[in-house]
Length: 147
Image (cartoon, rainbow, N blue to C red):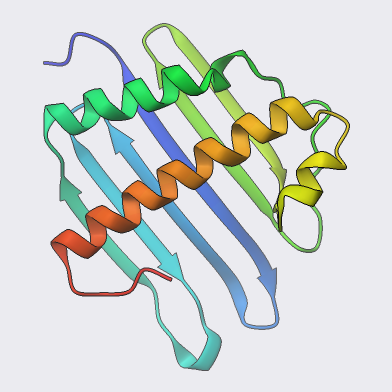
């Protein structure tokens, strides 16, 4: 039984020409990791994967999140979701719980042009790190290209 509550979920998606296209992943304290990627472009289909990661991987995820200091941020001044889509990041780390929602970020220029460039930069880099980690785990476990 995990001694500390832990959960992280990331979602990025939009409703467009090819329907609801998105990428989503989540980690639970027990090591369960779920991944889903839906794209209807060129008749692609929903990719769903589930795996169990070690307690050491969960510990590393907690460290990455803690060191990012994203738990101190507030998304009130971040760009709101729009026709391009949205991103969501939800984290429960011990007694702390945060939930962020913002527009998709195309580049660091979007971050710099926001009303809260420092906070959005923390979010942006953490999301990049988490996506990189998930894609690496997927590549190690299955021979598929996640995006």
